Length: 160
Image 1 (spheres, helix red, strand yellow):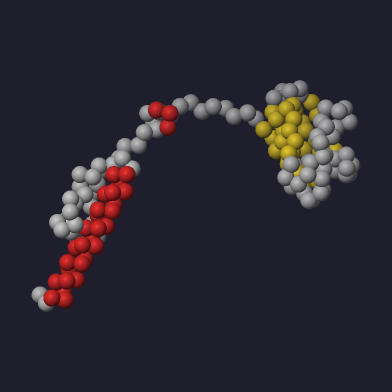
Image 2 (cartoon, one colour; image 1 turned 135 degrees about the vertical axis):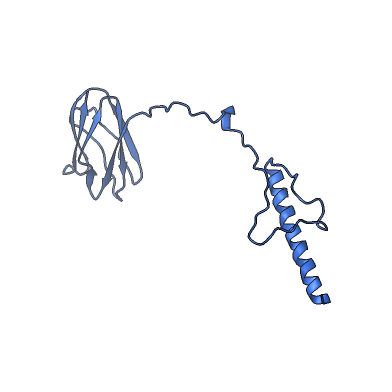
């Protein structure tokens, strides 16, 4: 071999060793083993083309000391969502079971309210991005409007 090709081969071995050492260092920082990492850059193991050096995968503890066993799902609180946009409640009618919290979100650039004639629903003025919520506990039909724009109408139907 000429001096040029020997130098290139040596450079390739040193670069390969540096990459393997860096990978082992990262793996060690994550709690993995470094037993397959080369001890010095002068004696690297040169992988064959297309092969990946094998390194053991670190075991990762589960948050809260869990062992990975599936826990039973917790039922989330029921919610209904109504958007206020384009000077309308969307959906205009929302049907939810008793015990559900309905959340109105103002997505318009103008302020709006959520108000019913009986006084049960009485939001403050909702600026853009503001929300109002109410939990419906009694089955029935509840009609509401925007007190600023009374042509905006909506209905919540609460089922048993």
